[in-house]
Image (cartoon, rainbow, N blue to C red; front, side, top):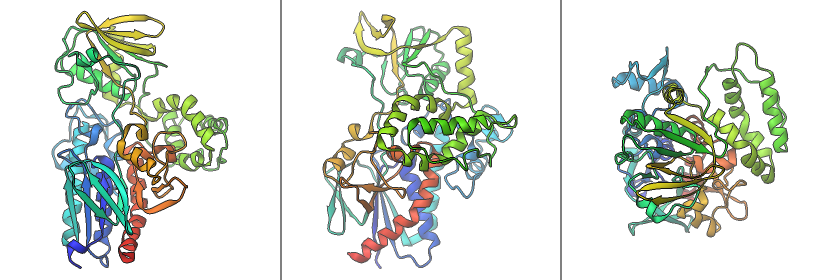
Length: 469
């Protein structure tokens, strides 16, 4: 079959999720000697694939928060990333190694690793598979015959037998109104991962950080690297900080015989039961990881109302144990706090304005305070509300929001559920936008394992759609 007649898979989004999907699709296709030609188009406006927001940062102090031996893009080769780091000369590195065998490297290196792994998968697939990066953004997806038409923001369109939506996290949004004058202020930083985001901050200035999660740790690391000397106040509604990493032994599972919960309280009871089974040989971090591994069937067993109750009442406490801090930024934050350079407070920011050349923040409970800079480190916005592509799919009845309103609803294979609840074999979604359907789909290991399981079915559906056409 000529390559131009080969079935086409269009991947919308070329960050970590989109690149990992392309990697696994190319590898699976290369391993099937009976498979015919295949075309994969990755629609991504950025110049490089595999980076996205998290791994596109160039700051060397922004580190992966999981050791490299647990961050392989190939689940069957857990040391794949670590071997690459040594082969490229990035390891050994005393600054990245927290303990023997535990390397927390800059996130930019993981982005480079993802890009090279994708390029190698494309080379290994040979002439039977074609990978193309289209530097654009998808504006809509609509049915066309037995397949789909993807319209791009540059006016072009792509016809495909299958489409996978992998758009990742929407950009963070301020948790409060921000005046136009504040947005124009040189000290207002809406995206702390953007290159030169901190370039206009006065070195002696006072800084407000809105949010106390992992992104706040990135902001402090950047301030430290650039020699900032002023005081920093980080606030969030609960004032919770990410907990530190611990041991990573495999095989500990106190949830193997846990019943499927039907309420948020029962889910919490299951977690507490696992904690109660801790022995001196295990830490709470291992309980959290074991719970994550068992979470999806328990989450899917909860009615939507109970899922929303978990998201509203329990999720903030779970996330500081789930999204743990790499040792380097964790120790830096503790040192700054001990030195009095960084304060953590519980406060709701209700507004940011410009006043007398500075930024004025309304802090619930403490009143109005002036700062020289304000850095937004809150979490991502709700995907359907923030992403016009997803919103268009929902409005067209091709998708529906998940039970907690975080993203789109999918079945266990990543097939999008339409407005009537029917699953489409050839319209799928993967990555963080599906977290509300699984309870957990944010970390690279979770995303990669799910893709590895789902790709064979996706490729079979692609071939089936081609045969039907």
